[in-house]
Image (cartoon, rainbow, N blue to C red; front, side):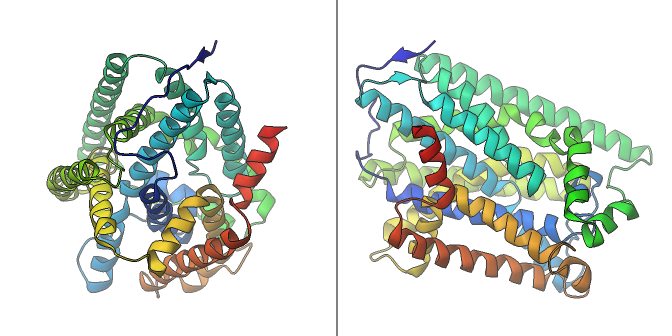
Length: 396
């Protein structure tokens, strides 16, 4: 059942046009997720290594180890949480657009969400097991319904979802600590040799079959963090409605508070989680990281507020943000072709000898390609390739 919206829902501090800051934030989040995923592509056993705990952060025992750890700590879970918040903002913008035109809601948005689910499924099977699009699509279907409810009802769902998520993460962390204390695999285990060989030398069809055979295990994270996804979606809606992304003084004040509270709480909690060792992984990635993400949004917004002219970096990030879906898929395709045996196979050829420097170099190179490529593409086309395909199919 859909509801017809006869009056627009305002977003204080926002304009009727495109919010430029959101494009920069979205582009930063897309490239930031690659800061985490690039280590997945280049680790022995690739996607499966994350499940075993192999390929974790090495610590600070040497300069290379310290550089890798800091690089990964800056990104791990933070930019993914930022992307989730921005996705919630986009959902609120589409709701308001439907309201201004008097269109039913969720109406055609359900088709958009289901199309995103199909895109994510294809991406999961053909490219990358740790796809986020499927989880976003399912969360969007729920949150889209909640947008027709009262603010009080949304707040109730938001805080219940966040509280249940914290309870789940606390329970899982305690279980991991107990297993570790009993001599189990609390710090992770080795990836089976056959899985390492699969990504280093196996065929493309074999890798697809491996993902399909292990779908439940490889889809475990979005199932465990569904409460967090709902919380962050609704947080994005609240921030947008409060005018946090507007160019006026009210928006700047909100971003300043986000910067102070987000980093002021998130960074110390991240440090405490790291001190807890491997058993603190879930607390760092799924509890502290969203706080840091709020701080990142405030920090980036504060920096953008002080930029007088749009430079190459700002333009590149905004271009990636406007082609976010295409950029997200393309960055994973490029890393597959560079790292796996079906392509250049650099993950095995360079191995540990060049880490972490070549992995960081790969991330920087892919970011440069995406920023330059998206800017060139947008000179001729209004949307990214996958965005255009999505619009064309949904129009039909």
